[in-house]
Image 1 (cartoon, one colour):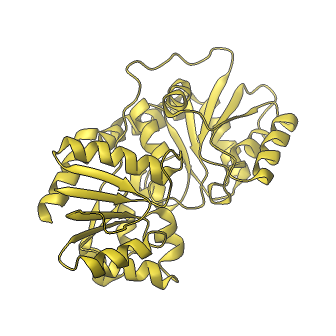
Image 2 (cartoon, one colour):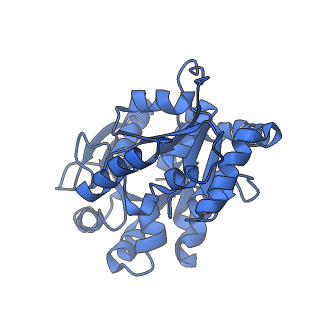
Amino acid sequence: MRLLIVTPAPMGSRKGNRITADRWARLLRQLGHRVATAESFRDQPCDVLIGLHARKSAASIRRYRAKRPDGRLVVVLTGTDLYHDLPKSRAAQRSIELADRLVVLQARAVDSLPRGLQAKARVIVQSAIGPASRPAPRKDAFDVCVVGHLRSVKDPFRTSLATRRLPTESRISVSHLGAALDPKMERRARDEMLRNPRYRWLGDLPHAQALRVLARSRLLVNSSKMEGGANAICEALACGVPVLSSRIAGSIGLLGEDYPGYFDVGDTLELAALLNRFESNAAFRERLTSCCRDLSRIVEPERELAAWRRLLTEL
């Protein structure tokens, strides 16, 4: 079939929506389909439109349905869609009503949909591939990785703030990967590096380089206030890197209700205690590592490929 993936992020962007769209395009081509990506639907020929983001792609979704009433329409729901826009945005609500299928990135997301539309939803966890060989961790530091652009919704400096509460003897060093999306965030990151020797902001690295930084780390911290299904967590699982995460639906849907590495959103002291425990308590460290090792199966590319094959077969 001819598939068109519409994403609000422009070509060449390193924002999550564009990375996801480009990765899915490669994946769907493996299934034998012809796939194009675009920022909007402008009457391009396609059998299936895959709209990434219910609100931001709403105009394209409405236009496609009006122009191609018999065409197939898939709407992919982000964290902003699920946990911010859907309760109050009529544009987002209309998008999911028009869709033939809804794609969500973790199991908990289905619960956030209107009950009458939940049957349309299909869970497709994003796959990830770690480096062929995991780099050895540094011996002179205990590397902790934070992956995410500097946006308020990511609570990007929570890990750095937590490291200020660590014992003096702690060897934890935070590497933060992600672009500063406004000058104020960039100033704060640079100021934090000056004030906190445990924190390094590395900026927006190319994906392969960022993956190597993550793979050599001993731990990933995801401190977001909301996520649809964090790709950084999926990549950490693929790399064999354990995770500490804010206790949000998007992470619980990936890691499970009983995962032992959660902290409350914005709770600096609780995160500091978990960081200290992970560094100093070998039993806790092994428990988290073992949990993530068991979870790594959910991000295998074959599973994601099979899920998309099933979905497109339904259509």
